[in-house]
Image (cartoon, rainbow, N blue to C red; front, side, top):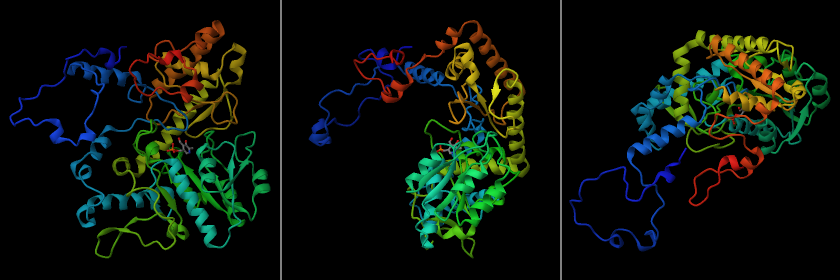
Length: 490
Ligand SMILES: Cc1ncc(COP(=O)(O)O)c(C=O)c1O
């Protein structure tokens, strides 16, 4: 495919402007001297049609959930209703400004207030901030609240945070960014938190246990109430990474399991696509004893029914971002929750779990599954047996691209060898799941017959097999004149 710069022909234009009907002044009279360009900008000279084709073709180079199945474990790449995108672009939302007087943006404040309350109800928490912009940002906010809480009680020695070895990498990263020391807790053979290990490490120096439930192996921590009691008996708090909430929506609430602080990934569970660095939202919910530590401002309602930003939280950790969060994402979450309602939320969880178990069972006929337990919304394949065909999980993942599937998450969680983490989500049909399973089986047959096919895959994508290390270390993010480096040269 030729890039737009390579199609450029001197003198071609993609616009036509009417003749100038005012006297033309010299540039030097209109623009300060220092700001006038000395060289022509390097812009492609092309027709409008070529521009349209360029962007349309670019959009087709990426896999997306609008194109096909995207079982990227831990990322909940579900289909998000397009109507919510439209709602978030209503004029009344689009054209307001964060500096506007509160009285003139009552609708927006009401939406935020109601969303705070709905998320509290869904999670079983008492108060919620909508400020954080991502899951990791929510973790940082939640852990900062926990830190301030302990310090406020004079318990400065509580510096340890216990995190299972199956946890998402952002958990230890966020805890250490808050100045905590991270202690890794081994999982049992089944893939659950090892209570003996936990007991050994839990003491008066522990600030918190950070967990996600279901965990990143897609397994429900059955002993969660026991874990909560152990944490609280030792004076530590329990933090919930709610990135996996899709699996338990409307069924069970982290607040009822004993968690004190919760973050959510609205850009997974509540109708905003996850990934690609787009705007996200990681609201944080707390139990009432932590309310005063929340970031300011929170949205509240006065006796006259007016909504306002409350900056008066005596022990607040301060602001965690500019203004009030990614408002567009909040609108989509609100519209989604209202639209599908209580029963709909339950159905999301039921179908997500059903789909994952259906696919798990189907794939267990030809691949080893990391745990024998019934899974929640996702499951992990142990790909170590692929070695007998001379291939790796990476090769299977690359070959899936040739068949039009986005590969699952690979090599995570770290505790499973050659891991392949599959999250089908609730928005896929049985036919899609069947086709995916059949395709993986077919790829294994290819591996048996001719492993080279897999090792050189993908063949059908614009960018072929990359040197992944170089691609990360020296990313080529834009076209540069005179440089003919191709991704495939890497
Ligand atoms: C279990 C878990 N926790 C935390 C995160 C971090 O969320 P974010 O990518 O929004 O920072 C993710 C991301 O996918 C996740 O899967």
